[in-house]
Image (cartoon, rainbow, N blue to C red):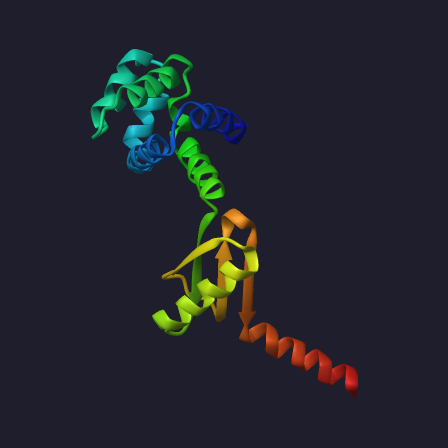
Length: 176
């Protein structure tokens, strides 16, 4: 439900802002989304004992660049009791800007070292495949083999050594 509401706010932002303003909105929302991970902050935002105007002012005080549009946007969220949706709105805005610019990012997971040249080769291959600009970054997660995820495109490609062993064993058993 939160994602649906966030999409409506993002669509309104896209229709009312130019590309520069959208990038500024995304930057501010992503910075603001970081504090939503703090339990104390969420207790304040979700507290029924604190007035919405006080919550709005508190959040606005955390913002670095206080453009009039951004402050009005935060006030609108506060008036509609939707301040807890900021992380969802940020994620949806990131996705919509990526679609609009045809630029996507993904992660590579592996249990061995992947060179920058290999990452560049993978980026170029995926960019050709999806006719988009793809930027890949190495994740700290360990995966037995290689796994590439591009969430915004719904793509997950993996090569697991364990899975290869299982498939080879099955093939040999069927041949016997």
